[in-house]
Image 1 (cartoon, rainbow, N blue to C red):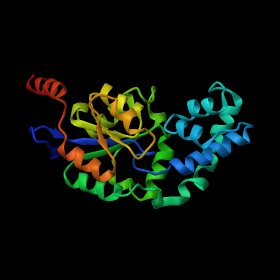
Image 2 (cartoon, one colour):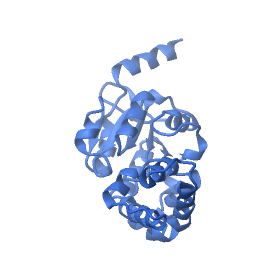
Image 3 (cartoon, helix red, strand yellow):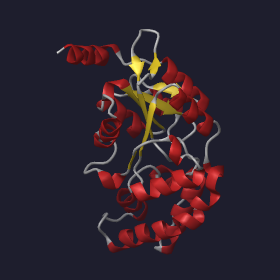
Length: 244
């Protein structure tokens, strides 16, 4: 495996990506769908409130929007209705959901020997379907959804499983996402935290997470991963482990 070599000689060998707000511009249609489903459950939700729920697992998202416990009947009904309508309201837009430069950027990273995966709060089935309709499923390897782990974001279980499936150490990997939770998860997992500012999180919120590398476009993401190398302390640990 070649990977991308940084100026200091260390190599980022894998990149794990968030999906909504990072690879896919699903925020507008998902916000609209959340508002619609909440309304069907008798709850008035603003577009801003809906946007703030994106990126969270369905239970916490609808629990927050409806103001009810996750195991409440209305929350469970909302989740079922959301999943029922997702294909008609979101997936139908296909490749138009891709952020500019994603297909070319993923292809460039693969050409440089960087292993790719997706780790998302979506269910694996929903994530696979979205990647398929956008035409980029073949560009990424493992897809780790919320249903494949016991603890979701920001716990690092999801990204550590993705790195493990790729056969790459976490400290030689980057995680790319658009929320503060994504960046905290990356740091906890000892991955390189790479934030995109065109998703949910604001520049200030994302930059406040120590060590985060900021990107305003997917082209920037590719450049940052190409130039990045593991943080010195983490790299030193990895080097010691290799010598043992």
